Length: 203
Image 1 (cartoon, rainbow, N blue to C red):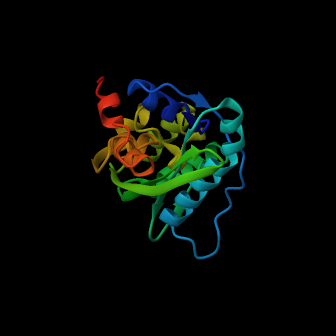
Image 2: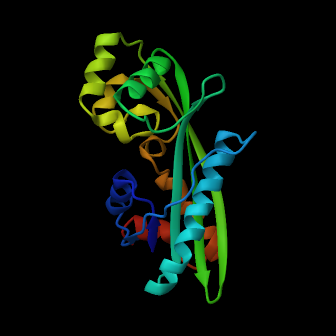
């Protein structure tokens, strides 16, 4: 299996679930398209990352690719990607303070079967609510450096957990990969011939 992502969080999630895999960070253009919704965008980017990894997988002789992309968004604020710098991170966190936002991850599964491929793409959304935070608290978090490479400028699995009042949905999805759903969705490209759920449970 190949993880088509450079995210250390996604790598850690799969490792903790017991999967063995190689990592290949696909370089693609992540510019949003006109009138594209956040779920549409992350599904498209995940598919594009997966397709870009197919030649690498064939070279290694691997037959399964997992690619993902995550975005933080609200209907009125739009999409919040990774901050450009500390000031941009502070801007994003100020916008999210005291509000509920969505975290959507698109996941693309590509199985290589001879010269052909079988593909399945889906997305998962989790609602995250922040505490009302003051400027000093937000600046202290930005100064830690943690927000600078994270979508939405926070890491729920790190110090950013202090910002979060509640979540509704899959926690792992906020970290970067909805593992439980992914494991069950793998069945789509294997037609039930491989029990990935059993593998993940140690069977």
